[in-house]
Image 1 (cartoon, helix red, strand yellow):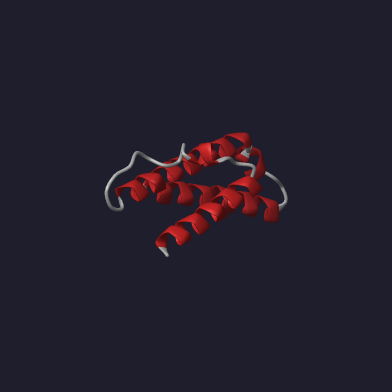
Image 2 (cartoon, rainbow, N blue to C red):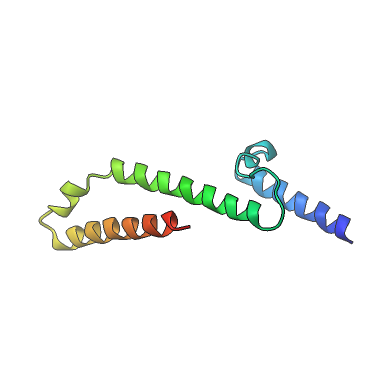
Length: 97
C-alpha cells in the first residue's frame, strides 16, 4: 500500500511540476540535505521565506512608492501607503520564521 501511495504521490508531483514548467531536477534546489524529523521541512520553509523576502525587496525597488504616496488622488495615495505597509508587515513576519 505504501509503495503504491508513494508512486501515486510521485506521479502527482511530476504532473504538477510539468504543468508549472518545472522539472524534477529544479525542485531539488528547494530540498535541503536529508535530515531526521522535521528539520528538513523547517529548513525548506526558511529557504522559501528568504526567497519571498528577496522577491518583496525586488518588487519594492521596482515600485516608486515616493511618487505614488505623493499623488493628488487620495484613493491612489491611500492604496500605495497600504501596499507599502503590507509589504513591510509580510517581510517582518517572514524574517521571524
